[in-house]
Length: 452
Ligand code: HEC
Ligand code: HEC
Ligand code: HEC
Ligand code: HEC
Ligand code: HEC
Image (cartoon, rainbow, N blue to C red; front, side):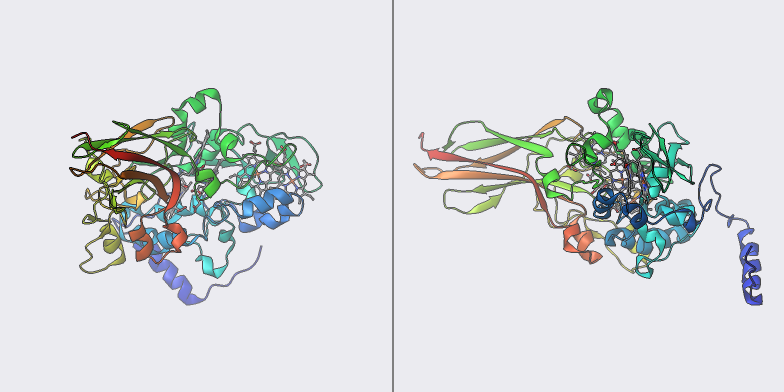
C-alpha cells in the first residue's frame, strides 16, 4: 500500500462535505447495489493500441468509429460538460446523470470511479471511449432486457470472443454467446431517464421487429466483415457513413394523372419505406435526430417553390411539420442561467411546411427538450419509421389557367442530420454535426396540357 499524507485543510473540507451530506434533503447519492461504479482502476484495462499490436484490422476499424469517439466527440463533450453535469448539480431528480452519462460514454472513468471525469482536452484515459476491453470483458447483464449500462463484467486475463478458438500469448480466450447477442448492445443502446421514460430503445424496437424473430442481430447489420476470412467489421457504422445512409429509406412517387392540366390541381403522393433498418429510423438519440422530406416544385416558368405537406390531423402532428416561428428547448437557458432566454428554433432551417419524421421529447414542465435525461414523457407522437413501415405523404399544386404547353417538375428529397441546425449553431458545433445529408431523392416531370 502507498502511504498518502493529507494536508490538514483537505481533512477539514472532507469533514465539511461529510457534514453537508448528512443534512436532510442533501442525502448522498445512492449507488445501485449491482453498479460497477468505482469497482476497478484504470490500470485494470489495456489501452486499445496494445490490442492493436496483434489485432490490427479491428483496431483500425474501431479507431474510426463513433464508439471510439464517444467521449471526445465535440457534441458529446458539450452536452455533458455544459448541460448534463451542471444540471445534475442543480436538480436532485437528475443527480444520477453525473455518473450515468459517463457509464456509457466514458466507461473506463465510470469503472474507475473518476466522476466527473476530466474534460477531453485534458487527455485522460476516459478519452478511450467504448474501448476494446469494455466489450470483451462483458459477460452478461443484470437485466434480461438490458439498459443503462447494466453490465456484468469479468475483468481479468480472459478476453471473451465469438468463437473461443485459437491461442494467444497475451490473454486467455473464452467463447461468449452474450457477446454476439443483441442484448450485448442493449446494455448501452437502451436508456431510461431518471423520470422513467425510455429515451433510447433501439434494442426494444428491434425486439418487436421481424428481424429479431428471424435471429438477425445488431452485429449482423453493423459488424459486417469486409470479406471472407476477414475480421468482423469493427467500424460500427451508422448514419454518419454516406454509403450506409443512402437508401436506408426508399422513395417512390405517384401522381394522380400522367400530366398536369391547365387550371387544375395535380396531386403528388410520396411513398417512403424503411426497408433496411432493424429498428425505427431514426433510432437511438431520437430527441435530436432530424429526418425530413422536402418537395420542391419547378413551375412552367422554371421557378422553384417549396410545397407544404398535407396535414393528416393526428394528435401531435404540429411537431412533425416544420414551422420557422416555433421556439423550443427553453430548458437550455434554464440550465445555463441565461436571462430572458426565449428558446431556439425547434426545427432549425428546415423550410416551413416540410414533414419531419420525429419523436418529440418533453420535460416535466411539458416543454419540448433535447435533454434526454430531463425527459418525463415522449409518448405524445412518434412519427419515425418503424422497421418495414411504409408511409405516404401528399402534396398538391395548381397549374395556372390557359397554359397549353410547358412542364412542371417535383423534386423530392429526404434529408437526415444528427442535430437540428439551431442547436448546432448555438453551441458552435462542427458543421458536420448538423449539415443535411441526403438519404434518398426522386423526381418526376409532367407535361402541361390544356384540356379546356
Ligand atoms: C500478442 C498478440 C495479442 C495481443 C496483444 C492481443 N491478442 Fe487477442 N488474440 C490473439 C490471438 C493469437 C488470438 C487467437 C485467435 C486469432 O488468431 O485471432 C486472439 C483472440 C482474441 C479474441 C477472439 C476470440 C474468439 O472467440 O474468436 C478476442 C476477442 C481478443 N483476442 C481480444 C483482444 C483484446 C481486447 C486485446 C487487447 C487487450 C487483445 N486481444 C490483445 C493475440 C493477441
Ligand atoms: C459500453 C457501451 C456501448 C456498448 C456495449 C455498445 N455501444 Fe454502440 N455506442 C455507444 C455510444 C456511447 C455511442 C455513441 C457515440 C457518440 O455518438 O458519441 C455508440 C454508437 C454506436 C453506433 C454509431 C451510431 C451513429 O449514429 O453513428 C453504432 C452503429 C453502434 N454504436 C452499434 C453498436 C453495436 C452493434 C453494439 C453491440 C455489438 C454496440 N454498439 C454496443 C455505446 C455502446
Ligand atoms: C462495442 C463492443 C465492441 C468493441 C468496442 C470491440 N469489440 Fe471486438 N467484437 C465485438 C463483438 C460483438 C464481436 C463478435 C462479432 C461477431 O462475430 O458477430 C467482436 C469480435 C472480435 C474479435 C474476434 C473476431 C474477429 O473480428 O477477429 C476480435 C479479435 C476482437 N473483437 C477484437 C477487438 C479489438 C482489438 C477491439 C478494440 C480495438 C475491439 N474488439 C472492440 C464487440 C466489440
Ligand atoms: C436489418 C439490419 C439492422 C439491424 C438488425 C440493426 N440495425 Fe441499426 N441500423 C441499420 C440501418 C440501415 C441504419 C440506418 C443508417 C445506417 O445504415 O447506419 C441503422 C442505424 C442505427 C443507429 C443510428 C440511429 C440513428 O438514427 O442515429 C444505431 C445506434 C443502431 N443502428 C444500432 C443498432 C442496434 C443496437 C441494433 C440491435 C438492437 C441494431 N442497430 C440492429 C440496420 C440495422
Ligand atoms: C445507456 C447508455 C447511455 C447513457 C446513460 C447516455 N448515453 Fe448518450 N448515447 C448513447 C448511445 C448508444 C448513443 C448513440 C445513439 C445514436 O446513435 O443515436 C448516444 C448518443 C449521444 C449523443 C449524440 C451524439 C451524436 O452522435 O450526435 C450525445 C450528445 C449524448 N449521447 C450525450 C449524453 C449525455 C450528456 C448523457 C447523460 C445525460 C448520455 N448521453 C447518457 C448511450 C448513452
